[in-house]
Length: 209
Image (tube, rainbow, N blue to C red; front, side):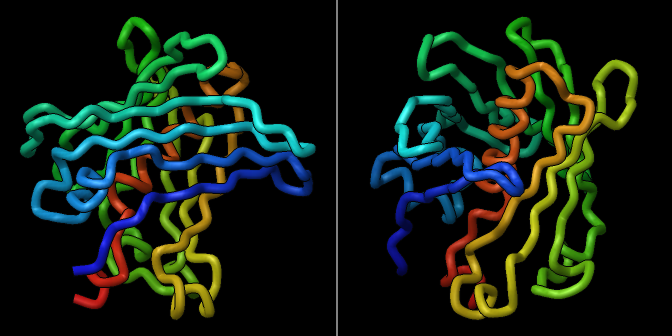
């Protein structure tokens, strides 16, 4: 059995040197269960810091509590907090949907604000490869009230070389589009992390099996 190590994420804006860095803070025992038969029940937490120009400023803290999750029972919820003020920004819920990957972004009143849907028939889900449509999975984000498209999260296999030697490495591109609220932008970033943990955090050993 291969030991499951903590996960790290580096984030930057295109054509800039502004970086965010997220580091998993989950305990050792919980990490070993993230790819097992109870992976849907196991929680995790990450700290995100702002690292541009050599700084190291706390930015976000995200946490999913462990829960007894099965089908539509006790669906996972990611809590997002401002690390500087300790103020909650909102949460992201992964509801149960047959043949659809759905994430609901909720405000402090637990009202749905934005909804991301990945479906189930994208080539990147059915046959992930480092080329063509098989190399990407898109999660269009729409307004929960009007249904209008406002943003998008795209997961993409970075290259053939990385696919061969580091198959657990992926790139995520976020198009904020019409999302202007800074808190909502932070929640969309947290949503990308949640998507990765829920459906693409797979060890090399599992992929070979």
